[in-house]
Length: 329
Ligand code: NAP
Image (tube, rainbow, N blue to C red):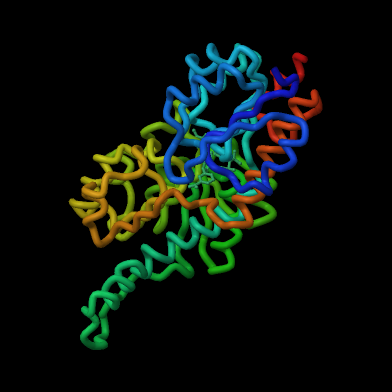
């Protein structure tokens, strides 16, 4: 039996990314790019593993922690870690690492793209031209809503929220934000304004959610929230699907409580192709691609590998969620 540590990767990653791990560890990998690893295989591999490199589609719960007798670290290929029970991981002494910072600008670019797409009806326009429906020019043909000089309300003004605010300021937007903690330094540096959650949703033309998914944020966008929004306003979600009660959003869209929605994330992913959201002209749906640029995904994969290497070599990782586990060693 090998004396090297064993690392299991739950989705196919490029060889050049994992080469370095192979110099000091045995590496196993689920070889399919499109399909998540079946639960039984993940459990089997976890039994042998010192480290797991996981995706946000892998549910990491007590069954995994119990199977992983040697497990020291889980490196999740995402900044969000709502797929992992952090409290239990900490109890089991397993370090959980994630990929903050490296995806900030790319995700902010995507969030701002969604604003442009819904406001200026870009997806609808592309479809219309492709389907041969473009018959003439007329004064209000495909007329959307301006972005510049409108008010954007960012719920969850963290790293990505701040990067989004900078993009919005470049478009001369008025920027409001809501967090649990006010950020006076950011207000001063960027000229953005704090609002309570109800005031933010009432005043904004574009409400963008960028919070993590936690017990507090789960289902925070309800029919009452959508009712408070302007009828001309758009809702954008680049956080996680479950921050919204999707039925309530559907109702708000159907009843004209809001003008439209731009969604990168859904409660159930991939979304059912028959989902009513996909039949609505005023909904732009993307397949959870917030951080999906080649440069950023490469940086995220490298960061996961580096965090695993550091933990297995008893060195301080770059980005750990439950630092107490590392400090306790
Ligand atoms: P971050 O720097 O930790 O920022 C999160 C912000 O949310 C913080 O400013 C936090 O401020 C705020 N927040 C937390 N709980 C809140 C609550 N109950 N009410 C209001 N605000 C709350 O994280 P980030 O790097 O910007 O990433 C944010 C999230 O974006 C991730 O957790 C992930 O779910 C999502 N994301 C999605 C994609 C995608 O592909 N669509 C890509 C990257 C990230 P306070 O603590 O002061 O409340």
